[in-house]
Length: 143
Image 1 (tube, one colour):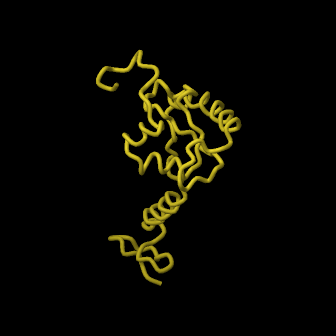
Image 2 (tube, rainbow, N blue to C red; image 1 turned 45 degrees about the vertical axis):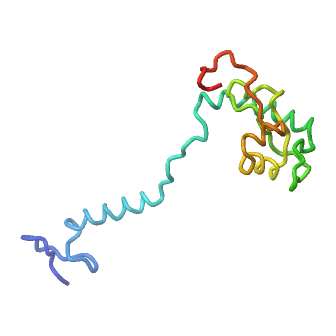
Image 3 (cartoon, rainbow, N blue to C red; image 1 turned 60 degrees about the horizontal axis):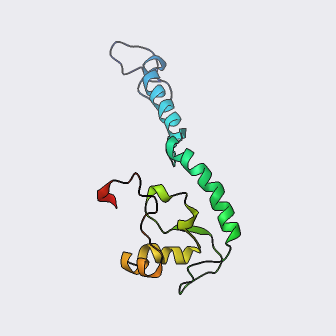
């Protein structure tokens, strides 16, 4: 058995370490803390702020009803899947978010095509993009 490498200590070492139990405590504590940190889950980041969550609640209910009433894709583009699964908002204004008049029931592939491939002018021509209905509180530079 070896004696502790700590200056002035004559205790025997524990296991394969160079230090006795008293002086090796710091290393054991670090090892326990590292194991504990490895088990911790990362902090959950909420998908929405509380304010946005209260705004989304009525939308979720209205959306479900709208999609049930409109089961067929209203866009009917080239790669249409026919079954509607999403809502396309024709108005870009936050004030028209809950206006059902500005909604279209669309399938995923048509919605991707509208949002990612079509330009604004083409969307306007085909009726997929309209000017805001509620302009009461919109700042002039955003119209």
